[in-house]
Amino acid sequence: MSVERATQATPELLEALQRLLPQLSPGRPVPTTVQVKELMAAHGSTLLLARDEDGQIVGTLTFVVFRTTTELRARIEDVVVEEHARGKGLGEQLVREALRLGRERGARSVTLTSRPDREAANRLYERVGFAQRETNVYTYNLE
Image 1 (cartoon, rainbow, N blue to C red):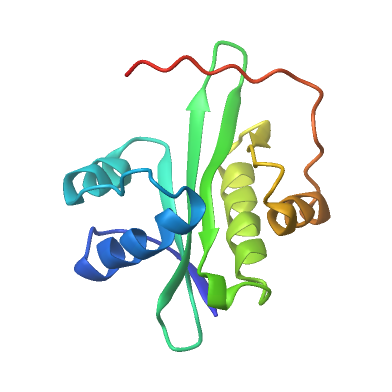
Image 2 (image 1 turned 135 degrees about the vertical axis):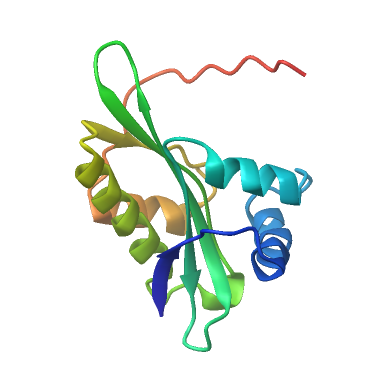
């Protein structure tokens, strides 16, 4: 099992995203080749991949570092591990690699959100050291 940074929008990567992302957010469109290339070219964005012992992509995580007026911050998005590969530590490896990248790049904090019904994921985040904040999260849909 290993974690690596995606560097190209290969057919293997695109197929993996088409398989994995609906497990995270059913009904949401999967990214196109152009969108995956834009993600990998975007300053501050990193797509991490988890591979199983056979070398197959079985998990992904998007990590973004960005500057605000007061600090350098980081965010974890779209963490998903293939259902049959869960419980083997791949999600934790992905998250720990993102935290390592955040420290390396000088971010002050790393945030993420997770739906309450993703109980195993929430336990993982707490086990790794994330603390749930008392806050209101607001979203304005521009579509």
